[in-house]
Image 1 (cartoon, rainbow, N blue to C red):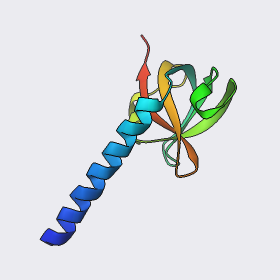
Image 2 (cartoon, rainbow, N blue to C red; image 1 turned 120 degrees about the vertical axis):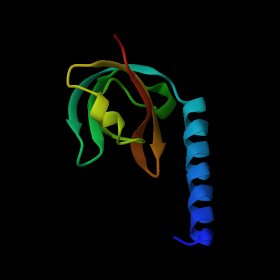
Image 3 (cartoon, rainbow, N blue to C red; image 1 turned 60 degrees about the vertical axis):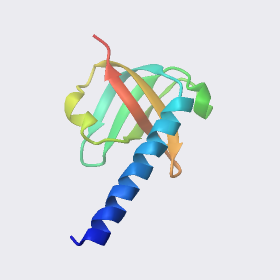
Length: 100
């Protein structure tokens, strides 16, 4: 990859990281339970409480994940705390931690 493309890639990566940080700053942490993990689709299905920041009632639904590596650390049945936001028109988990 030439120097110009490397510079552009680093710039885009920094912008993406900044966007995720700004989304998580306005996000609301919610309790949930992992119901399904779909690594190929980059999604996790969560049963969760109300998410006021995106006007969503309690339900069970599939979310895209901001970082597909997170799916490798989750297991069905895990209790989690997560943040979600609408990113590019899709509901996306922007942060997630397993509660022990």
